[in-house]
Length: 485
Ligand code: NG1
Image 1 (spheres, rainbow, N blue to C red):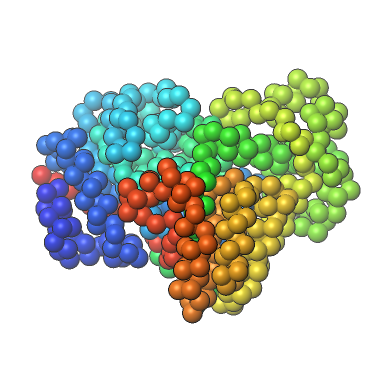
Image 2: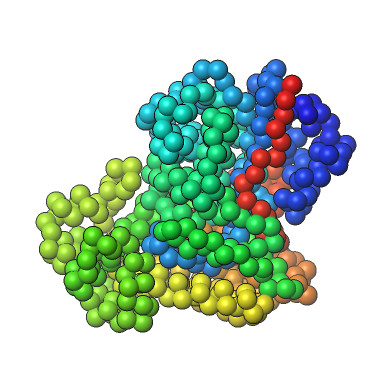
């Protein structure tokens, strides 16, 4: 098929063009987004014949927050909202990228590709390409490409738009190089790649974007990556509500996120020292979790950690290292940016307590799903929210309002989803209450929010999208079309 034929097929809903989409998506809106993508691609890169089109979905995390980088499990699902990309190989080593929402970018392939300034969207594309080069070697990545990206996902909403962009890019770079990689392997490579953007992230988002399955929630364990699939409770629906408060991971939320990870590393280091564990074998809190078990770990944490936030000086002394060594090991993030001492100090006990108890909730959530028990699952979501709010301190007043409204409107459970500091909530709602739930949340939260957050509202309107969505699990990243001349 040619590009024009696909455009025609999308417009007229020809089954040979739209049919395969039904196996991937739960709704049909994607045809409009694909049309916009292909029209923009054809305008910006006219006359290309060898064109690929692929998608990498975002995700909503149902439970298991800030556990992934500790090597502990999560339970997300992939969603219809995704990053779409149309691309064609080039003969030279240039990568030219366009995106209707952001300025054009262009860079050369290299062993170490130069980054744009912090916060630039081009960095996510650089990261994806760099991740492939790091995995397969520069010699195998010889040709650049032209690509047009189209983000159906709202940005900075905790729905993983950044990782979808990195994954979409990595898949593009692999296709252009004529290479293949197992999705599990690619997920790990893309998670490491995303660290080029300065975020000390875990592997959840890249894994669910690649390994998502239609109609299934995933329980994911890490190091090594393992995925179990399980259906959601029958007669319940997942509803995502965007508080419209942006948690931009290039700004303050980046420091707040990286600091949480650092505190977990500090908790791990201090436990290793106090319990005389072999620090060469312990890489993260999850390793201690699996060595001691949750109960003993909680007891040891209470015994060895103070409740209050530690200062750098105190922690360096506790760890038996100099302040200089402390700065070297814990004072900077993956991109070398300084991580300042938090105003409240390093709260080891509260943060580690969240991680350990959250892991227990993920395990129970899996059992709840196996039993088809939506009410139990909902209670676990609520407990997760309280712990995210009180122990991990990643909520936001707007999120607190949304959760309270969701519960009053009849949700079985509601919590923040993703990194936090704004972004979205996720609620589980019994189907017979769904209509009244949506109406109440719309009226009590969104009637005011669209005025309070006009920019976020505009972004949704431009994409004809809604900040309040009932969602079904979608499938993972996929090639949609391979077009010839
Ligand atoms: P989002 O919500 O996409 O910023 C982040 C991390 C995940 C995970 C969650 C919290 C990135 C790319 N992803 O997700 O790895 O740690 O926060 O559970 O930073």
